[in-house]
Amino acid sequence: MAKIEVVVLIPESTRKRPGGSPGPVGEDAIAAALPASGRAKLEGLRDEVLKKIPPGTVAQGKLLPAYQRYDGNMYRMIPREAWDQRSPAVEVVIASALRGLVASRDPIPSYHLSMAESTPPFGKMNRWWHAAGLPDVLATYLTAVRPKAVVDLLSLEYRESVAGYQNRLPGISVQPIDFPGMGRASQPARGEKVAEILRTGKA
Image (cartoon, rainbow, N blue to C red; front, side, top):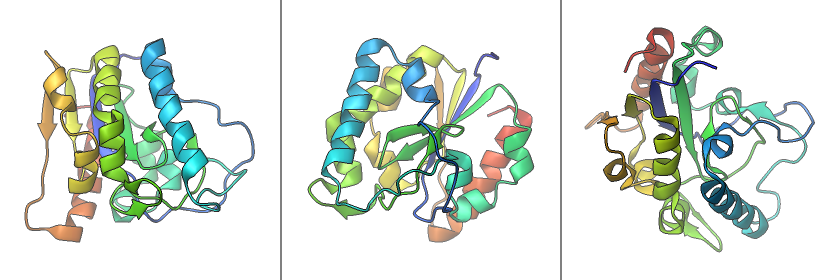
C-alpha cells in the first residue's frame, strides 16, 4: 500500500444519496490506522451516538462508500474520475456527525445528522464530538499515518468539532484553507480544490 503523503479534511454533507449494497460495515480505514486505545475510544463514541440518536436517523441495511454517499454541492464538484483515478498518496478524511471521522472509501449508511445541528440528547453535534475527544482521535490518526501535509478544508462548524488537533502534530504541515465572505458559495470551491489534490497528489 502506498504511503499517504497528503490527508485532506472535508465536512460531510446534509444531502446524501439513497440506496447502496447490503452487507457488513467492512472497511474502516480510520479505526484500522489507530492504536488499540484510540480505536476503542472512537468505537465507543460511535456506539454512544448510535444508541442515543432518535429512531429512524440512520437508514438500515444499505451501504455506499462515503465519497459516493455524500451528495452536497462540494461533492458534486468532484468528478467521479477524480475519485476513481486518485493519487495513491492522497487520503480524504471526512468529519461526520454519525461516525466522527470517516475515510472516503469506507462504506456508510444514509443518515440524518449534521455537526452544525442540534440533536437530542447531544445538543449541537460539533460541540459534543469536540468535548468527547475528537481532536485527540484525529491527531492520533494523523500521527499514525504521518503524512507530509494536512489540507484542512473543513467549514466552520466542522472545524470546531476537531479544533486543537493541529497543535499536536510536530513535523506535519497543516494548511487550513478558508473562503472568507463566500458563504455557501464556498462549497463548490472546496470541491474543486479536493479534485485538484486527488488528481495531482500534491497539497
